[in-house]
Amino acid sequence: MKRLFFLTRPSVAMLVLAVAAVGLVIGCSEPAPKKPAGADKSSATQPKPEEPKAPAEPAAKPEEPKTPAEPAAKPEEPKAPAEPAPKPEEPKAPAEPAAKPEEPKTPAERAAKPEEPKAPAEPAPKPETPMPAAAGGDEVKVSAFAPAEDLVNQFDAMLKDLTKAVESETEFKDAESKISKDVNTLIVVAQALGLHDQDNKYKKNAPAIVKAAQALAGAKGYADVKQGVEALAKAAAEGGDGPALKWEKMASLEELMKAVPLINTKLKRNTTGARFKSRAKDTAGYAAVIAAIGHASIADLSETKSPEEVEKWKKYCVEMRDAAGALNAAIRAGDEKAAADVMVKLAQSCDDCHAVFHKEALGAGKEE
Image 1 (cartoon, rainbow, N blue to C red):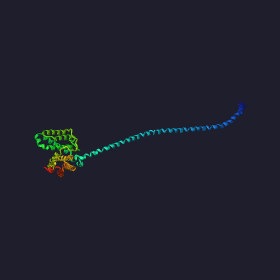
Image 2: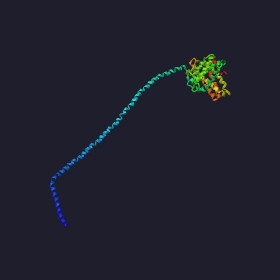
Image 3: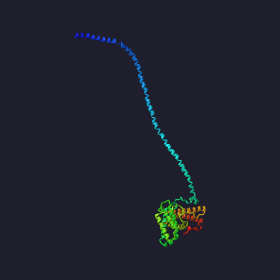
Image 4: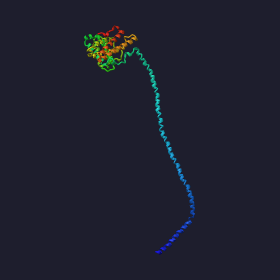
């Protein structure tokens, strides 16, 4: 073992020497490369200039302005402002204001207002009644002085009497003097029912009734009167053609004024004592008829000869109408005292009228 050890030691030593020799050889052969090592130092310094390549990377940072280029894309956002450009299209709405210039057509309509002078032409009719229609009160509702119910009751009663008057020639002769008064009174009642503000069963047929009654008023002799009464009854039941109704002269004023005293007499007989209540339906109807006659007479100026007389005529007609209307209201209310007071006023209105027109008729309303 020891021998082996000693044998190996020289081997190791030689190995070391060999390595050292190799090192020397290498060391001798590398002096030239050391220059490159110097060169390495220079090159090492040169690479440092190459480090600016890293700054070159900062040059790449200038490329970052490409991100500003993205802001340039933001300028493309003005395309959104381009949408506001459609708002300029809104001026089309201003174009509608251009239609407002067409409103001058309304001024043209104002030009039509100059045609309103035709309304002044209406004042011309007033000369026909230079007379205060205020007094007449065409605007007054018929129900204010003559309820439709009371007028209908009287119409039915008068038509019944006329029908009975033509049942035979004997009946006709007995009633002949009264027929004309009743027929003309019936014309006014139909006129009032046709123009009434309250609905009633004769309102629609009133024009036909007036036409038939006017024909009957001119009939002479039993046969013609009978035929006329039948036509009147048919018109009342079925209607038909007739004149347009308005408050104008449609009946004979003379026959109406002759009928008033007869109606007034029946009023006096039935507005006192027990009859006041038992005959209230009839007397309310009589009062309504007189009121209707008074109102209808306002339009008939045949008795007047001057503007002054026109004013007086209207005044007396209104007084008659209003007194009769108040009597109707008192009877319907069952107020006998009020009815008696109004009867006095009604009689006075007749006397005041006769003091100016037809003095020979003074006191006619007081006949029993």
